[in-house]
Amino acid sequence: MHTELLHVLVGAHGAALSLRNRATAADGRQLDEYLATVLTTRDGRITAIDSYLSDVDGMSAFFTTP
Image (cartoon, rainbow, N blue to C red; front, side, top):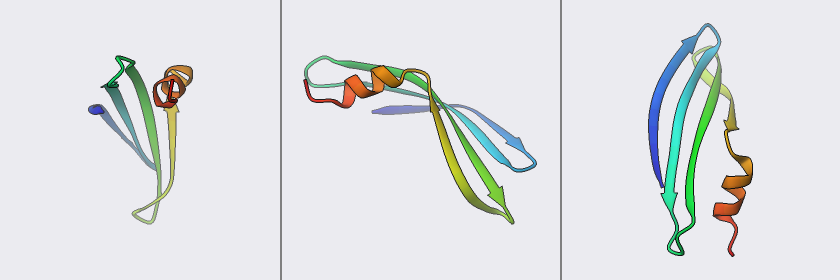
């Protein structure tokens, strides 16, 4: 798995990361998707992490044994 950090966005209550994940399985299956990960902070600590995927079905297919 190769994860590329595309952007970091900072706000009053946390930060958001724009990421791209790519991988090739031994059997040739490909994964190529974008993610947004949102970090909510309070008092300088991360209190929640939410991730949003561009291709949920593709992620499931990649990590499911054929």
